Image (tube, rainbow, N blue to C red):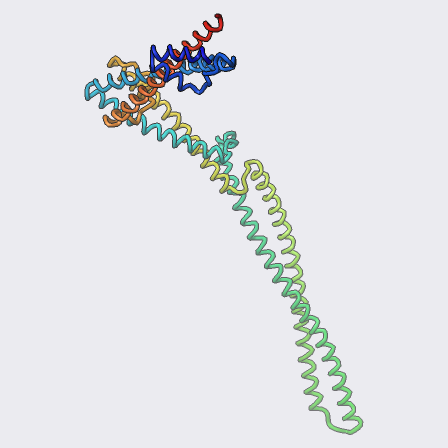
Length: 369
């Protein structure tokens, strides 16, 4: 403790600023000669400061160079500065376009359309073919619906004809029964009661003939319609079965195409193709813009070199500031502020290391004694 106080006394006499630096260390320096760990901490702090200085030094030099370059640019003629401003503005706007195309490419890549590249040459024909199959399938569905409706109607008529045929059979029995009953009644009236039955017999005979003819004709009509209906139903069933086979075959083709191209309709495939072509177009434009940017970078660097200025990234890294005089003024203020901050940080760190070096030197000399 006495040794460190003696050292602090000597230090305060030689340089009050050094004493202030030493007092500001977050290390318990008063126990330097009592605790060896304190010396280790001071040594580590010294090494950390050296590394910190190695980092700050190139940054400070870089900002010194930046300020010098910007000052030299401000000394150029108005025409040269105007050309640089125009180039930087175009460059900045082109970078925005490049970013937009990059975002567009990323969005289309998320939709997973890359697999379409292998079908790129004939994808339009594939879409056209798929649409043809879908149109054909819609026609087949419509035909099936029509055939089912027709078959239902024929079945309905068949039931009505069958019911009518059953009624005619019953009517024929009724006519025969009525005729027999009428004959019995007339015979009884003639032979038992000796009543004249010629007129009633004629009337009944005519009625029975008319009823019999009507039943016979209507029965023939119903038989004809039932046979016709049966043939129509059979034909409708055959056509329906053929149409169903066509429907199944078309659906198999569509299912195969949907699975192969990872879609569920031609509209989806067309949409994916549009996204794919948009991505290809965006990639081509992105490539063209990249080439344009490279050319503009060369133009900017050429304009600077033509005036004896070697830019190591200042202009290209701060394009938006170089599109106007006010922008360059703002940039100059920021560069100077950053340069001065680095200088203060460098000086304070260097000062701290100088004081630490004195402490370590004194400590080693005292240890040797």
